[in-house]
Length: 472
Image (cartoon, rainbow, N blue to C red; front, side, top):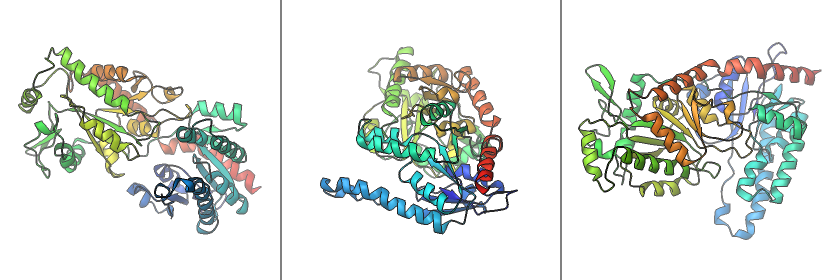
C-alpha cells in the first residue's frame, strides 16, 4: 500500500499500491508513499525518485516449519492478525495523510481490511487495483474446496465491494467483477516502465562480461556451453559466450547459442516441467533432423562448435531468473538431463540487470497459468518493453496481451513449445525470418504504450473522480 501526502485539489496526491516501477511513473507529479514488506531491492529509478517514499514493514518470520504441527492452525490465525496490526499502524501513523489509498489485490487478507479501516479513519478514498483473485491463489495450496478458501472469498468480495473505485488488469476480469461481484472496474493494462527497453550491443557485452562466471564456469556442470568456452576467463572483458571485442568494435559471434529467458517464481501455478520436456524434445528432434546417431559422442559435436562450425539449428541457452520454493527440485532435474544442444542456468539478477538481460535475449518463455484465468503476466509486459518476443502458455485471456504471430506464440503442451522453438530458431542467427518478424512485433507493442500514457488515459480520470466525490 502507498499513501501520498495531501495536496491541493488541482494537483491531488494518491496512495498507490502495486509493482514499484508503476509507482515511479505515477509519481511524476505526485507525492507517493509506499508501504511494503522488505524483499528485493527496487530499481534505482524508484529509490532515487524524490517523490517516492518507501516505508518497509517487518516481515512475518517463518517459524512454523520448526514448530510441532499442532501449532500450525495457531500460526495461521496469528499471522494475519499481526500483519493487520502492523499494517494499520503504518497506514494511520507512519504515512502522511493521503487523498486516496490504492491497494493492489491480492493479497486480500488482511490487506483489504486494513486499508479500508485506514481510509475510513483518515477520511481518504479507498481504491482497489485488482490484479487477480486472492481466493484462487489460496486454493492452489489448500484446495479449492477448503473452508479457508470460502472464508477468504467472502472477505475479498465483501471488502472489495466497499471500495470507492476499482481498477483491473483485463477486460475478462472487468466482466467477472461486474457480473459476479457487483463491482464496476476500469481496465488499466500493465505497461513496462521506461527502463525496460532494448539493450544496445555495448550494454550486452558489458552484461555478458559480468555474467561470464555464471554462464561459462558454473560448478559441477558440463554442457554445450561450458565445453565450448574453455578459453573465456571468468573476468574476461574482451570475450563472452555471445560477443567479442575486436579493436574497438563489439561483434556478435555467428555461432553463438540462442538465448532464451524465462522468469519464474518456482511455484505450482507455473509448471516448469513443461519447459524441461520441451528442451529435451528440441534436443532429440534436432538430432533426428540432422540425421545424427543417438550414440554419437557429444564431445565431437562440441569440438566442432568450438571450432566455429554452424548448424541449421543452434544451441539453446535457457537463463531462468527468480526465486521460489521449487527451485532446488528443478535444478536437480536439470543436472540429470544430459542434453547435447541445450543448457540451463538459474540466477537472480538485480533490478538494474534484469531489463538488460531481457533486452539481450532472443526469445522469452512464459509458463504462467493464471489461478483465476483472468490476469496477465507482468513478466511478458516487461519482455515486450525490451522488444523480446514471447512463447506463452495459452489460457483464457492471454490473447489480450500476446497476439499470435505478431509479438509471440502460444502453446498448450511441451510438444507444441518444442515445435515453436524449432520453427523460430531454424537458420539462427541470420536466416530466422519468423523470429525476426515476432521481434519487430514485440518492439512495436513495447513502444506503443507506456505507464504515463496508460495512467493519464485510464487511471487518473477514475481516481480524480473518486477523490472529488470523497472530498465532497
